[in-house]
Length: 171
Image (cartoon, rainbow, N blue to C red; front, top):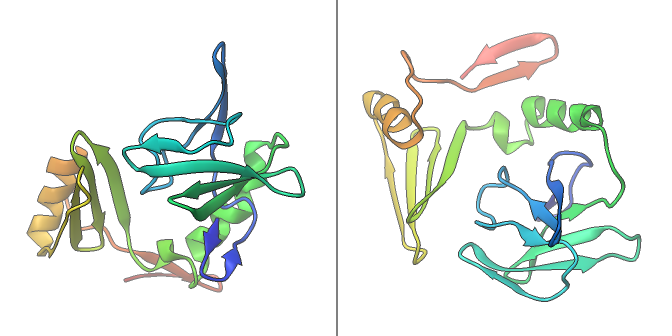
């Protein structure tokens, strides 16, 4: 994935190549703010989508960069990988203090009218027109938001678990 300092650690995101009779497609449901529909992997043209304008560009090494609105989002290797190849990236995302996943819980989904995201106690609702409504929730509201927006029923507010050495700490 691309960040402020360029390309990040390898194998920290999994996207799927789907082969159909109409050609190869990139299916990526886990990237957060991304395309709403699969992208053509064999096209190097702009691909308009409710999530933005996407383009797939080849790198000098034969990989593919996925751009949204002209900004690189992540690089797709063309070589097949086993699920186990992603274990180290998963571990880093789960334990590194530099990973945004260790700083806040994030639950997000595409809706009929945009996207809804709960990050910690911040509820962000984005409309199809890009308008964003953001508000801080109390503990009881967090449980209600998980239930109403995501269909998740919890008996207590979730917490971020961090790891320092061999110790586990909830925050």
